[in-house]
Image (cartoon, rainbow, N blue to C red):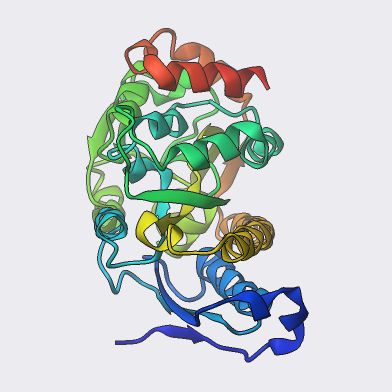
Length: 327
């Protein structure tokens, strides 16, 4: 089994208070992305900073590329205490802590600046802390420690989409998610849930007319070879979340918890910078491959949804959505 073992022996920061640590810890960290992905590089940065802050007392063993299972399995392992830290999308977290469904709502954020203002601010920190409890106030078994950028999801199609009506009658691959399906139907397209690995051939054969994702994924999966129109409507911005097992968290001293928070905060800012560079590079590669980029006003798409999202705006999801859009 391949893993990244972060140990730089960086004891220069021992003055940070590591002498007060009572235990040396080796913690297991998992994610499902490749070694070149900004998330992996962000987690490596987290590990390096945590080791430095602790004067070498806390060392991370990173298991990338889905070696330890799926993101849902990671969450279950965090709950059981058999995994210490894991990166997951906010989407599967909503199956365990339903208030996180707020991040699946389309056109929740005005732009990338608003997105990070919310996540770095009071609302974002509140939602990270709230991961520790379910709606019934029972412990979830894990908590969030920082967000990572996963970009915005956008439509890409075989024909131009510059306004909502251009989606009418198109078969669009979506995630198997009730919100994504309802959104696509409200825009008069036909949602087609299917595994990501089947999208290329489905586009090639004409079984679907498009899909939706971020530029780096569009390029990595080479969908630009069979889809020549990419529309930046930014319909969703679902963050990735770095989660820590409550089993480990409760064992950490106050000083150790502060090291974890600091390393996580620094890694979040490091990762989002990498993501922006990767996304910009992907757009350039798309254009070089002959993809036409469309940049319509996202408000026109949001307005076209009408009341389609009303069934999902209930309880805490509705409350958080109002807070986010008011900021």
